[in-house]
Length: 277
Image (cartoon, rainbow, N blue to C red; front, side, top):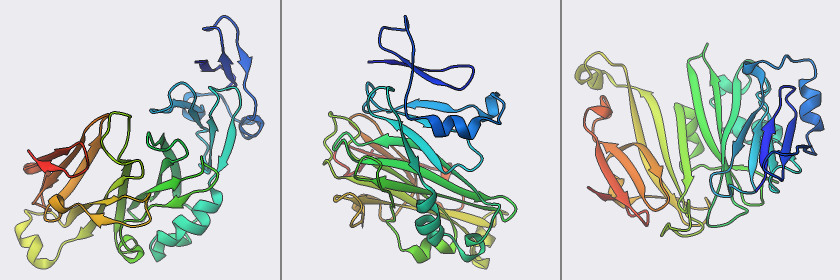
């Protein structure tokens, strides 16, 4: 595999002989044009990230742009790069999931990060998108899916759009099959959809001064996001977080929505059934 390097002038180079010689990568002219009036300081420097599954061939460049609308992708170990422009995804899809107060806000901040691939199908990819406006105390994160190697993207939505628009919303998803060791099916996706919402008057009496609660539920799709169902073993608990390792899936849950991390139960499986331990 090649070595990749971003030099002091923010130019991306690759080496095929362990660093003895370096060549300039192709397909990044628009990145350099966008950066021509910027200082090459730490805060604005492009970030290079290796794919966690296809480590020897795939990588991503996060331009660290104020617009935050695009990324760069290589599938040939850095020799050539393709630009992914997410502007239409933001304007046509993600905006429709935002509450009315956010849809026409010009000062909202959008970031794309954590691109990853599925070990079950090399064309399946996912990217996390966050939208925030701290003046309105609003934050939401979405997961977007591509089934054609980044050519087109769609929002993964395990819950109705009306639910997403009602509260500050976070949706964290992963491919069930993160490595060849996994027992999950090739098209499995799991998500935890969580809301931050105001408590009722009766709930506030029990919440020791807190005014909001966080609730989360865990969903599974066996057909790459076309249909969703709650995971049976987690229907009656508040799912806080989950992680997917090479072989196992772990979920962390609580029955307390007011102070959820005070008592946490752990669920684990190799096939997404998630058994309490």
